Length: 81
Image (cartoon, rainbow, N blue to C red; front, side, top):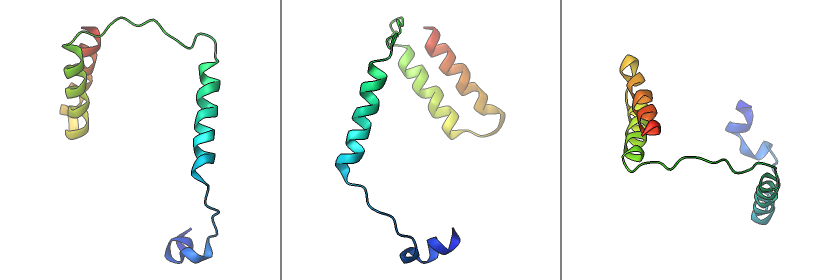
């Protein structure tokens, strides 16, 4: 693997056209859509909940150590509003 990173000419990868990747994505979406019970009834999120969830996620990303756990509390509080 290290050799391939140092000399990329040794690795022959066939480039995939964009339309093949798009076709695969559409195929997966159609099959997931066809699954039974593909829609879950969820209660509506209150306007205060979204900022709390966002700030909790931001807190999780930015802090380290034991302070980080408070981000989960903010997310849970946002989901329960």
